Image (cartoon, rainbow, N blue to C red; front, side, top):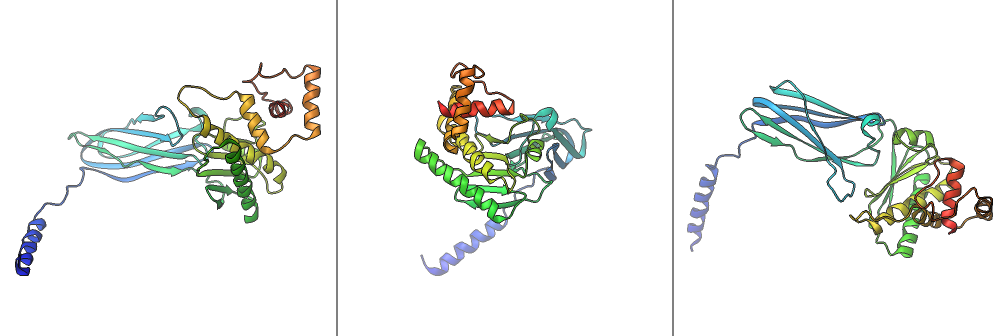
Amino acid sequence: MKKSAWFCLIGILCLSLGHFPAQAQSAIQVSEDRIVLDIPEKITFQLSVASSAEIQSVELRYGTAQRSCQDSIAARRMDFQPGQSVELEWRVEFAELGALLPGQRLWWQWTVRDAAGNTLTTPRKEQTLQDQRYEWQSTTNGPLTVEWIEGNRSFGQQLATLAANALKKLQRDTGAPGLGPYLLVIYPDDTSLREALVQSSQWAGGVAITGENLILLGIAPEWMDWAEEAVPHEMTHLIVDDLTFNCEGVTLPTWLEEGLAMHTEGPLTSFERNAVLQALEEGTRAPLPTKDDYFSAYGEQANLDYRYSQLI
């Protein structure tokens, strides 16, 4: 075909395309869609929406990115006065409905219907939760990210190195791929950590959120001895979950998983070993595995249980 004929054809196509109508906008328009964090008290979902017809129903759906065998979705049909313009809020009170923790990834979306039969489902939004009461610092080491409040950058880097070394040890000892990414959220003390957890054992100094590769710990900059135990311990729980996750309800006995976590921390001291042996001789600690799913909720006894799990 001659060049002039090509130009003619292209011109006809451009004119034709120019007459195609633009894609119509949805009759329902969202002007605000966000969450407001008030950790450790609550999270507030906010929506402002309008339509040419009366808005009659709005439903909120939300959940976390935690790995699960079943979809874990919360749904809330909103109560409101129907109208063409609606502003809505829904508060998740942690004390009543359970806490969403700093570092967790929260997703949400709304479905809106009006009297004309129009339906709009908003794009699914996702946000990593952060305790807005503090200013956070952050550092990374491979697949690991550490966020902390108090202490200089060297402190955060030391924590990231501890986690990275524990991950390498676990990959070597268990064969787990340990791909990550992993997030460690570090509070400066046990009190502030327990505030964020809302519901926790009084002695808890840390927690691993399996299925989300998330660890929360209370570690002050001067507590590096504690960090050298706690960081590898909680990293073990994440890797064990990677290795054993299934939908049949099969899990490792508590004593075995905690024993593996204690092993990652390092060897028992002679004092710790003798304390366990003495408790067994005195009958104040029952032999495992007869109590394989029970660890004490009290500090000293809990410490004894953990040491015993490592000894066996």
